[in-house]
View (spheres, rainbow, N blue to C red):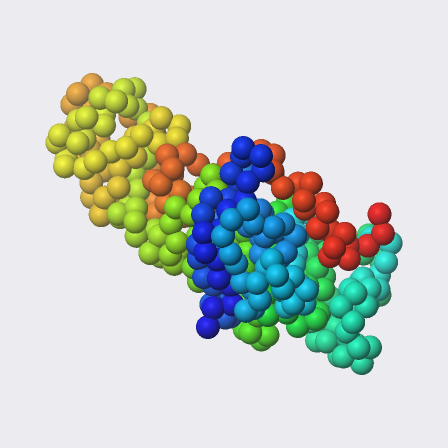
Length: 331
């Protein structure tokens, strides 16, 4: 059963098309990832699915409800975790959860039982009566995850859920998310520009300039690269690519930094004869790197550049508005 369905979803801001005819489905209990750079349309898509932004064209349904004509039903069925923190730092963890429960009309006895269960799962039960301002970044994120699940949503939307956290904390956050997914049966829909984070998803949609350019499991996406990845920087990259094509039957391509990229099975066996060819032509090899393909290699292959982690998000203003809808505390 599909919990999220979109067909030809479009969102324009004046002459800018932020989301361009996006179509996909997400199954019940799936961990689904949107992978792409800032400004690719990830947050815009989430905002349309969460009824914070109306589509310019196309349609979308979440939990069986139309995002345009059944907004209240959609909102009741989802949890949402924003990029920016939306907790009230002047309240305790428990008070933040209680405030959220009041917004969703969660009965008191149900709230107390549910809150205790979730706090145990995210390992915050011992800290829930402390002010949130004393929490670490990882603790705040875990509290937001518990809060997002407090009203038992069908779908939990996470927009860059671990941005700004250190790698170890990011891994722990994902351990909690997958544990909660298995225990609750909730569908996870997350956006990220972190490659390793996308590996946690059952399927990944690669999005760039508002369009989905690939949608598959992480393993099948990486299989598109075609074997091991060899990166070479030489004194003459153009001549190197030509020689490798002629002598070794490979199809080199130029990487985002001008380097020569070769995809081949058994890359470790190919490197010695490649080096011999280049040395024989008087070309200096300044660096060489062999690795198994990653999702970053997939993105480079599809777009010719690396994912941009920096840059302005076209939906910053909308995200700030969304914080107010999410009950993010007094401002």
